[in-house]
Image (cartoon, rainbow, N blue to C red; front, side, top):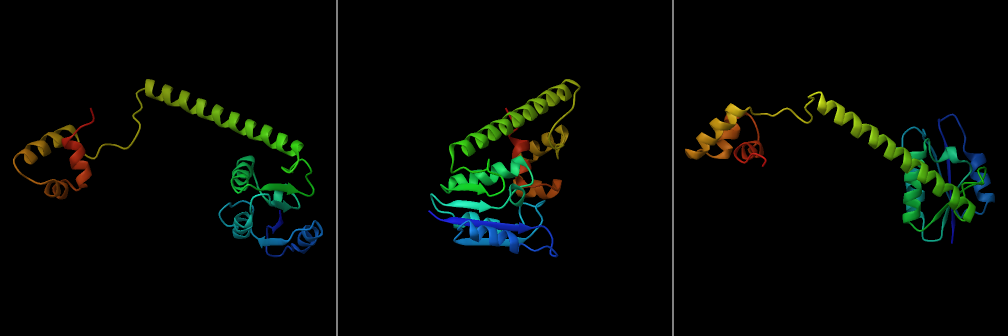
Length: 186
């Protein structure tokens, strides 16, 4: 069971040496460090490498939570990846963030429950908004490429022997659109 360290600073004029020293003092066998903004979750390549280096029983160690995630959703996504690897997470300055202990697991379980509750409330509000919009007559989805008259004409021409490719070319659409015009949803 290894400890893998992760250090990050936000800008190029900052220095992560102090974080790396603390991670090494915490007995991290490997330390991944980078200079990347925490705003973007897709530009943190060293974090991705650190998570990929985790093996079952390993622990990802960081100095503080804010070095890992900018939001609860970001943190929970990261925790899912770490848990999928069979590993743990620990923050040196945030003792509550330590999934190697029952207390840390409890705190993160509660946080996960709150995030799930928030997602369900958002979904419920969206569903209610959609229902109100439909009651007002709002149409959802893309506007149809072909109107009812064009669909009838396509059916006539197809019955007369024209191919879907020819019809698609004439109407400036794809063959799948022609197929849907010939086979309306039931």
